[in-house]
Image (cartoon, one colour):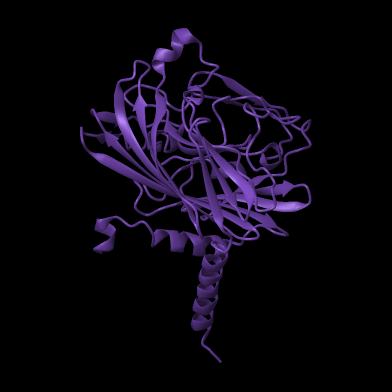
Length: 356
């Protein structure tokens, strides 16, 4: 018989290899529609998501996100509202990447709901070029964008690369985003950032009491306790934090899980060791906002420490995240998610990491 430690190692290796095997066994087809300012992603011949980049959205987004079985895991409102959809926070659209305070401009909260007289306080992310579209065992979509003020003055240039893959039960997105400063750029610690996703109504957390949340602009969201029978969701982190305790905690990954119909569905965001402030802080709210924010340290530590990332002109910073979407009879185990995180940690390494 093998020693216990060898058995444990073998099991972990099986998890790693099995996940790697299932993550890329369905063909990915990327279809580009420049006139409509969108790129569609199909996996196994079925719609997965669409990259949408019209300036009317104030930022590019992936919307909606679906499971391998076609269940939509992102909220429909405001682009395609479904019956009963919460209608708070109109800037929460699909999956996005931006921040609340860059040189005093709020990129996170900008949307059609901001009055024209106040727009000057908000930043805009304008997609400039679709650089690469490639179908295959895994699909690739790369683009460039400018982070600007309302007058069009560029603060940052963004280069993002998505790698899509999937299996009969899983969908996976690896996102690698580099921001380069065109002028000095200060990311002042703020709550609202950085990689954000708005979960479907079913994946919100149930609540038995009225809860209210105020954003940075004083807009209050009220969740009525006990009256909403649709939510089934919860959170768990790699450090074992669950429910509302996941918020402001640090962990390598955070998993949002629940039921959509009869199926167990989960969405996991995984951090990368190359990222600033690894492991990231989690801005995970019961009402459905699910975000990884490595740049909110002062808020999440109640002022005990701060990041306040500053990029001098010409300098850059890169962020890497993995998003996993699972559907089946049960949510993925901690061992499986740890295996995926370990696999992800060995990919897309910086030269500094490679030399270690």
